[in-house]
Image 1 (cartoon, rainbow, N blue to C red):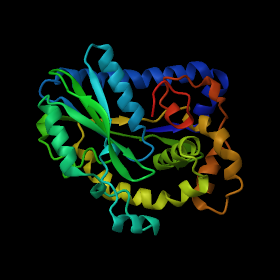
Image 2 (image 1 turned 90 degrees about the vertical axis):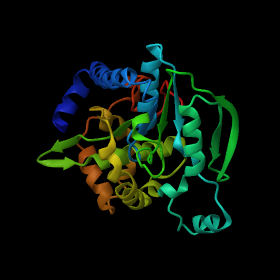
Image 3 (image 1 turned 60 degrees about the vertical axis):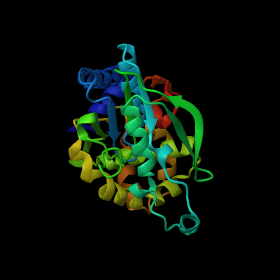
Image 4 (image 1 turned 135 degrees about the vertical axis):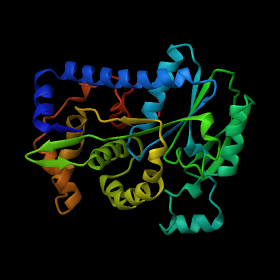
Length: 306
């Protein structure tokens, strides 16, 4: 799908609140349709696997679906695959310090432990949930017990959620979702690729929540994109539901955070490509962005905790 930047600018400049409301409602209505189908098959497929590349909006989409299902009286739990990473061994610590450890690899997941917990969840047996300490690169036990009851659902979200080698459980037990930005923004015959929208999301998110500089996030772009092509894209065909997480107003929301820094980084072709669109993008005051928006995953002040 394509959308003209001129159309986005016109809507943002004329009726920003109404435009944002309409886009948020449209996205929620689409997720409601997905949730309705998931609910219909919840007895035989109680585990939902939600995957997508970095910056795709996985976390918020998972939480939105959980909220929709909870509101229907279907208790739903969302778990992050990040908490199933394997602790670093001595060799991995050395490789990480040298910048030679492939952090995108599915081998970072403790598959045996994950599959054991998945089977217990499916069988309605209690498990003690893990939590991963990224600062220390260690997996800890949270002390929280999850015991799924018959009819309840569990969402596993993460970049490797559709990889059958990672989540080695029968397909008939699961509903599978793939979320990403699919829409291209058009300007004077040129297209801004969806991967650039996701990069803008990551730049703003990393600045807000990870205290990471734009330069650091940009320096990782090539390896992250290579990891996506190698480890994520080959499995998206397995999804039952494909979701475009693009919000038509989002480039306007990111402009105030990015534009000044980008103007000092024009030696980067990647930055120059994004700047060419941002220069002609109408700015959007973040006060218009309501807490129910997926965009809050990146700019903050949302109703969901990340």
